[in-house]
Image (tube, rainbow over all chains, first blue to last red; front, side, top):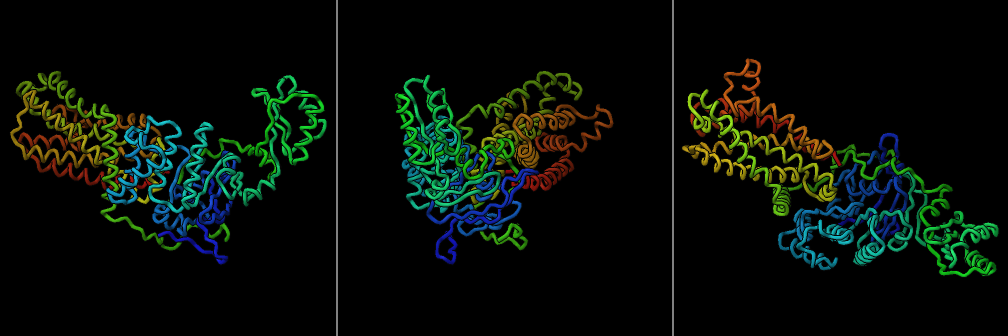
Length: 341
Length: 274
C-alpha cells in the first residue's frame, strides 16, 4: 500500500521536503528546508541543539503542522493525508516513548491493536519483535524496570510493529552510554538491512558515519550542506588527532611547539587535562606525519595516539565559518504548538 | 517549488477515514492499557474504595443525629436522606481522576506515539472515560455495601439501577470538563487544585448533605439549579420515593448540555496540543 513517487530519473523518493517553514514567534525553527531521502537509504540530519531537527521530524510524522512548504512521506502529504501517512511510518523519539507501567509485551501488543492488526497477529508480532530485539526474557516485566538500552530497544521494536516503509529516528542514542549506543546502532543497522528507509537526526558526526549513507547538515533552520558521507567528509576534510604523552607535564609544551610549527586544522589545538591528551585538528596525512615527527624531535614518549572524525563543532566551523553554538534555549525540542490531525 | 505553495486550500484528500469498528477496536485496546495500569498499581483504586466508606461513615455519624432530628427523625432518617446524595457526590469527585491521570500521560511523552499512529483522536479520550466510569461503578458498589451496613434499606432495585444509570450519564459529562482541564493544564497538581475549586462549592452548595430549606434565598437559588442537587434529589426520588420527573429532566438536560459543549472542546484541545 506504500506509494513511492518515481521522479523522472527513475529514482524513488521516500521522503520529500520542499521549502518547509516553521516559526515559533521570532524563532525560525525551520527556515525553508529542502530535503530528499531515496528509498532504502539512511539519511542523517546532523545539527546542533536548536537547529530544527526535531521540528522537522515532528512535521514529517504529522505531530506538528508547518507554517508553509510541503512535506511528503511515501507519497503522502503530511498536511493533507495525515492518516495514510501515519500508516506507513515508524517513530522513535528523542525520549523513549514506551509506556513504563506496561510490560514490554503489552506495549507492543497495544501498538499492534492500534495499527488494526487482528488479535492473533498482534500477539505473534509482539512475540517476534521481542525476540528480535532480545527482550523476550523481560517481556512480562513492566518497562519501568528496564535499563536505558532496553527501553530504546523496546521503543525501536514498537516503531517496527506496523512494518513501516519509512522510519524516523530522532536522536536515537542521545543520553546513552557508549556500550548501549553501540547496541542501538547494531539494531538500527539490522533494520536498515531489512530495507526500511530511515531518516535519522543526530548531533554526532560519528553516529551519522556509522548509520547514514547520506547527510544533511542543518543549522538554525537552514540546510547548510548535504551529500554523501564520504563527499561531505572530503569537503570538511578534517580529522582530530588524539595524542597522549606518557608524562602529562609534556602536554602544554607540546601544544605550544605544535602551534609554533603552524599545524592547525579546522580548529585550534586543545589540551584535555582530564584525560591527559592533546586534541590536534589536522587536515592531511602530511600534517599527521608532521605531528609524529615533532613529537619524536622533542623526545616525548607517547602512551597512545589515534585519529578521530571531526566533531560537530569542527564540521560546522568548516562549513559555516562559525561554531555550532546555536543557543539551546531558542527552540526547546519539546516546543508544542498546532498540529495537523 | 517555492515556500509560497503552502497549506492546502482545497478540500482535504484524506480518504483513510476510520470506521466505527476501528474506533471501537482502538478504544478497546486503550481501555485494556488503562486497566493494566490499575493492575500494575492497585493503590490507584484506593480512592474509589475508601472514599465511599469514609464519607458515608463521617456524614452518618457526625451529622446524622442532628440533621436527622431536623428531618423529624434520627440517624436512620438521615441515612435514607444522605445515601442517594452520596451517589451524586461520588459521580463528581471520582470524575476528577480522569483529568489528573491525563496530564500525566501527556508529560510522559507516550502521547507522541499515539498521535503518530493512524487512530481517531477521540479514542484516547473515550478509553479514559470508560475506565473512569468502571472505577465509579466499583465505588458505587462499595457505597451500597457500606450504606446497607449503616442501615439503608434498598427497597427499590429498579430505582437503584436507574440512579446509577443517571449518575453515570452525569459523571461522563463532567469528565469532559476535567479532560479539558487535563489537556490544557501543565501538570496533575494544577488539575487537582482547579478541580477542587470547582468541586467544593458545587458539592456543599447542594442538597446532597442537608435539605436546602434552611439556607438563605440566594443560596437556594444556586442549589436549585446546581446539577448535583437535582441529581441527588432525583436519586432520592428513585431510590426512596417522592417526586422524580423534574429533577430527572434537569439532570439529564445538564448532562447533555455539558457534553455537547465540553466534548468538542476537549477533543479540539487534544488535537491541537502536541
